[in-house]
Amino acid sequence: MGPKKDHRYEVNDRVLCKHGLFFYEAKIIEIEEEDGEMVYTVHYQGWHKRYDERIRQLHCSEMFLPLTDANIAKAKADIQEASSAKNKRKKQKLEDDEARKSETGSRGSTPSDRAGSSGQAPSTHSDRRSTTSKLSEAAKKESEDASQHRSSENQLGPEIDAQLEILSNLPRSIKKILVDDYDAVVNQGKLAVLPARVTVYDIVQKYIDFSKERYGEATAIDFEMHGVTRVDGVNSLRSTAEGLRDYFDIVLGYQLLYKFEKPQYNALSKSEEGNYERELKIAQESCSRKMRKPLRDIKPLLPQSAFSQLSASFTTIDCLDGGPFRASMLRPSRFYGLPHLLRMFVKLAALFRMTNSDEDEILVRIACIHDFISFLRQNARFILDVELDYKVAGTEYSKTVS
Image: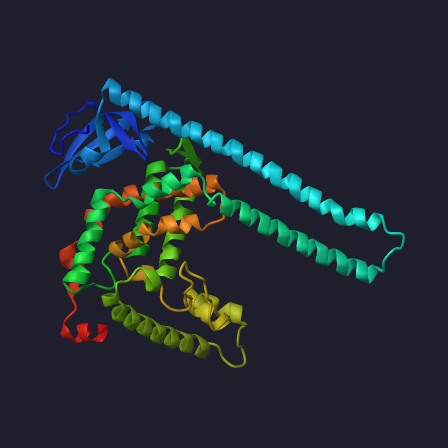
């Protein structure tokens, strides 16, 4: 059983503190008061100080466990069980890979055996065409076999499935933001103020800056997930956060909006399209007819979206629901804020279940996302203010929804 929500701690108190998915022995090394709430800095036993964390009083009941023999034994058992399961999964994957390679090699030798048994040499032209056709068929067959193999295993192992369930089960403080967001938009008829005071783009940049400050020049960072999951320092954290931002830009208009918000989004898209056309016209006029630069030389004068539109009238990206994204137009991360980003986090498990990435790579990304979520949990109160970040839509707007 965890501590009571209002339990107060002292410097040098020892607890079990949650880091990632598991609990570890830690000591409270500093206590501060911020806005009337106690904030505890914990240091994990035997870990580098860069892993020290600040835990607010509000989150103590979910982050701390009493340092009892029973709790210590259970924490160690959970870590050991997860580590053993991961090693078993890796061994099974290696065996499966070897089996597939062996099967592919056996298929690949068949055409040459048949050619060797022929008493007449084929023409060079027909031989090339035949070989190309057979190789294509073999590659296609191998791809289908691999796809069927992954499908039969549901693509991902049970540990990854468990990790994805945990990933979609956001911290209570984050869930509360989503509940309040739903109430504001769906029940109260409010809209997010756009652009947000702190946009998704800003959030990602702040997280990257925070990561650089926290982890410094470390070339590797270890997270406890099914044993130790090692990521390539801040580079992995940055690339994951930027990837989430780009994915947010793709899916917001198709998957992250309530019906009540869509007219606002459509109006914003139309406005940005008008801005783009004006920027495009200015860029075109800046090039004289005699000294007109090649298309690629205009690129620095335009935002990336405009250059994409010049190069090709549309760039379509298949979303999870099959909808196209007009990359030449709106970058929602420059306008929308934390609540819409959190709506996307609920859907990440579905995204990972559709990926063909290696399971170790998926674990790395999940570890990075957990770190990002931890950052959001600790800083949400400074990013979002319900009183400032929503506005009443009004009667005229409400008419456009129906």
